Image 1: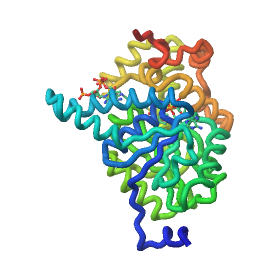
Image 2: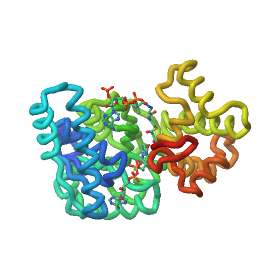
Image 3: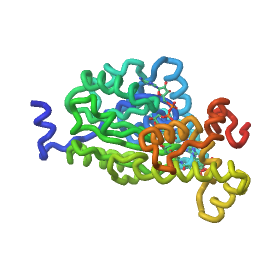
Image 4: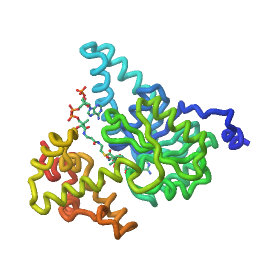
Length: 302
Ligand code: CAA
Ligand code: NAD
């Protein structure tokens, strides 16, 4: 009955309560912008220590946003940060965290089996009204959704790093997704300050399908010795107007992330030369030099 009421075209789905699963780089940013925009947010992590880490990062980044708006008005900055922070509660129990959610955004580890396990449990625990979304960078939304019964209420909501700064949100459709779900995603994306684009469920959606092969081509260029990392980056910043060059951007995104994206696509589409993983990146991953987050990648960071 509830499902039928939700499907009715006269009933618009308003998103107020948002549960974000995974409080890492992306999930903490998604929780932050949702809270900034007035949503009640529940942020789920695997343990209290990681919840604390996410909270610290959210407070730091909320302060950066508030400083832009309120300049030197420290009282206004503090009020803004406190109010947004008060809308976020932490949890280590995904099933109870979705009990009154209008929307769940999953931002956990990029692994299909782990995402399946989570969504199966969430599908049983969440009420019928709850929409499900994954922030996956490279996995198929349809494959992630295959384990849930609510495929009409499922889609991709793909944010970009750093979430509070990057203005884009990709809304990924799957054939079963209802128009009402799509409209609710669109309205929510706009309400959290993003410009939304819509696309089909193909590898990398729009941005990563173009960006990841571009980063790999830049790395192949430096592997061949055609130009130094610094010169490749300077060239793309000054010659193509990019805010970061491809080598520094690869360091920023993280070599574990780009390498696992390419490895996944290469396994699935072995004949596509654009998806071949890079040897030097694989070696950096082996050495745990993952880029900015570990202090070293193709460049060194203090
Ligand atoms: N939270 C809030 N504000 C932040 C922030 C954060 N996490 N990170 C940066 N900012 C703000 C800063 O406060 C600063 O604000 P002001 O301009 O008002 O001072 C502004 O952003 C710029 O930051 P910085 O001065 O520190 O540095 P910058 O000018 O070099 O910009 C950047 C940093 C925004 C990251 C810029 O270099 C950039 O746009 N780089 C490209 C990033 C990109 O391409 N991201 C997409 C990666 S791909 C992806 O995410 C998809 C995937 O699936 C892998
Ligand atoms: P991350 O490693 O920084 O964060 C993932 C967090 O999820 C970790 O803190 C981990 O403890 C937590 N987690 C893992 N399993 C969990 C579970 N079952 N329940 C609750 N929490 C759990 O990763 P990230 O970079 O934030 O990426 C998260 C997702 O977002 C991935 O699917 C990734 O492909 C996607 N994504 C990443 C980027 C990027 O630039 N890093 C950009 C867009 C999308």
